[in-house]
Length: 221
Image (tube, rainbow, N blue to C red; front, side, top):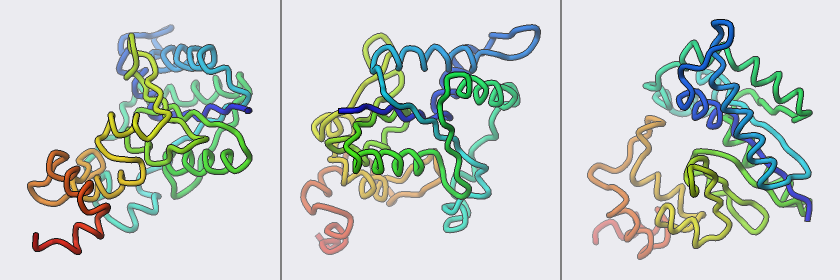
């Protein structure tokens, strides 16, 4: 089976930036570029993909989710200037490797990665999504694997291949992840959950009632 690697550029470059804060070349910050290429080479050596694609985020104000919910990611700080100036270098790096870049107005990198993985799966191609975002595990299936940055042995990739791997990581099956975050919220995205409901309460509810709709149908109990 052919194999594709799909890169969440923001996740990789943020992790690289903060891991190499003091790296500079001729007074230009280069830590994110250095960390990015190290991650890319490591991924290529480990997974030996036939194809590679890279998805970029777009400006928060243009997101369709921001139109639906004005507080979506509203409290997130802007990217540090020392990181912003390295993004063109990272784009050049991807071009040097011949890696196709994907950026779609209105949609986050996560959305693009999920769509690409689904499209490749329909063509019989196995995907490895390289990300730091655990909730992307909702797209996992027989053809889509999630590779979490820095969660594996020695700070490498932790690859989630099965439902059991996702349950071990998040406590629920992939298709329950939207319901889980619907209950507990997501502070990093500015999404409020149900008051006083965290994972310890939400997971047993979902196990008992199946999904968010099932919880609402049994709200009195």
